[in-house]
Length: 367
Image (cartoon, rainbow, N blue to C red; front, side):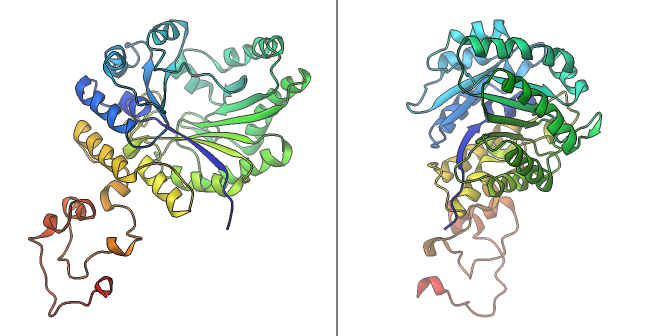
């Protein structure tokens, strides 16, 4: 049997998802959702962002949310902290909040100068200007490993596609600084805020990185899904790296998520947690999650935002692998999303459907 890489998954519904939704969603609903997600078996949950409500008004309620929620033991709760002021605010809720720190010091850079200016009010050059001080701090702290990373790795809605050569050139510049400091590079981060990922380019990029720098064994991938490629790119990554590697994925229940600065709004999306967990289970990879509870959370999200989410397994249900879950061959026509929920609620949801069969169809599950 094939051995797959180790997978670390981070749930982003409460942060990446909610930051693009209606600012008037009540805190009570967000609180119920956060506590429901905590009961799914997911081990890493981002609860929101400590940012200025001027730029992300949807996160203005984070203090109230964190002061009221009941953390579940064994779950790591983190939040995005954009600056020193945000970190100061977050400390008031730590614990249970874990002030997120990278496992190793990282050098990072956006390939799209326009996006980083829109998103962070700073330039690509300013990002790069911080590299020497990050390296110096790592040397003073006797760091034994380091990371490199790029954002908008595969392309920009404002500047078009980026090539493999552009990706590798920027990563090589970072790697050389760590080489000069005699700190080995073991981690890499590839971000995709504007949904330019495609499976063949993800495979090409990861293969090239592993060939050039075999010491890199930790791969953080942040895919968005505006063009429907995030799941296939995720699968490409799973097949490309080795069993001794670790893949870090981000996703969101219902696949909701977006950035107001990239130009795609709520259409940006992410990999839907329920879809990815279903895929991993079909591949024989242990997830430790209760898929039924994740599906219930997706339905909660749909109730909160007032529209269907972009995930799939919450609509059709998991594949009925076990004999006891096989569909009744004599069920009537199933045409609506509501009727399709028979996988969870039973035949009552389609009881009034049409049955044009001339005679009962034999049911092998009953044998």
